[in-house]
Structure formats: C-alpha cells, structure tokens
Length: 276
Image (cartoon, rainbow, N blue to C red; front, side):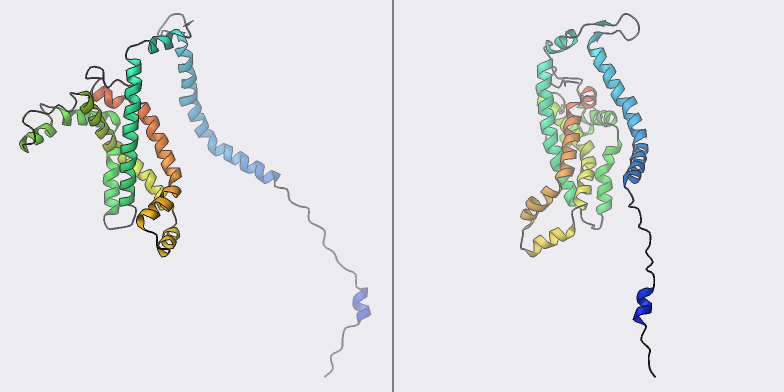
C-alpha cells in the first residue's frame, strides 16, 4: 500500500489564517476596583476611629488651651496657664518619676512572664488548651473590678492573705500590703501582671506558632542547643509580636489610673500618684 505525500504546491498556496491580535489588558480597572473595595472595608473602622477617637482628641486639645466651663459660661482662651498650673504642682514631677518607674517594672516583669507562659503552652501537649484558658481567664475581668477584688484580698483586717500568713506563722501581726510606698507599688504590679499576663501570652503565642517547624528541625540537625535556638531563631522571628506587646504594655502603663485609684487612692503620702 502506497501513501501519497501531500502536494507541496497545494499546501503552500493555501491562505494563512491569522487570528486577530488581542489587546493587552490594562491593570488599571482591576486596581481601581480593588482600591474601592479596600476603601469600603476600611470605611466603617475609619468612621469609628474618627468619631470616637480623633474628634474627642481635637476637642480635648482645644479645651486644654482655654478656660472652658462645661455647663455654661464663656470659652475664654488661656493657652499656657493650664499647662503651667500642672507643671507647677508639687505632685507633678514625683508623679512623672513614679509613672516611669512603674512602667519599667511592669514592662519587664509582664512581658518576661508572658513569654515564659507562651513557651510553656506552645506545643500541643495534653492539657495545653486547659492551661491556655486558665492563664487567659483573668483578662476577662475589667481592670477596676480586678482592682476591687485585690483590694479585698490585700485588706489587713478582713483580707484572706494576711490571715493566711498569720496562720502559717510567717508573720505575727496583720500585714498591710498597701501601707508603704514599696509594698503598694509591688502589690499593684502583682495585680497588673496577674490581670494581663494571659493577654500578652496570647499575642506571643500567635507569633510562636507562625515560626515554621522546619527551621527548628534544621537547627537541631546542625547541632544547635536549646539556648542557641532560642537566641538565634525564636527571638528574631518573634520580634513583630514582641514589638506589638511592648508598645501596648508601655502605653497602657503610662496611662495607669484605675488600679491606683481603687487600691491606694494615691497613697500612702501621695507616693503612688500617677501622671493621669
């Protein structure tokens, strides 16, 4: 059986059909739609922040530069007097020093304990979920409510802590946890650490779980110790979570008011008066 080869001349004479060239699609409409979509998602939050944060901030700034009675009267301007009255107060600079001292102690102790708790509950071990819940539970309380709770615990007459120490034979007389400047500061720090340790543990735990396990496995195969892994891998990769926790902790400590107002009311001898 013979197969006839196609005629070259006939094949060459056929017209070549060319498809019309497609116009290149521009990315401008797509980017425009994404921009509109992003603005739509961000609009509710932007309105909320503007109404409840930015506008009140501007209003407070205006009030600080004027003599403004809230109920009635003229809104006269006295730009420097309000600030000079604050700085001339004998309590202002001691309050600044105390606030900075309190912020430094709380930041170191709180973030250190939160990181330790996050490392302890990082792995999926039996009971890890239970301990995560237990550590986070104090954060469900309001700060004023927690301060009132600890005020009852610290009471030298009716509080259970002082009675417990007496029954254990550790002290002979009732303990005044808020009676001296040092004890009042440390007692307040203990309250704040108990209240917020679980919250910062959760932030750091999320950062720890985002670190790939392959990085740890490669380091172990290279013979790295636990300390080397923690210093060279965990801490550098945990830096964003640590930065967020540090920012929240410092700003919250600088604005401390509720716990000192409920526990000490600025005492003893105005030693726990804060800037706020």
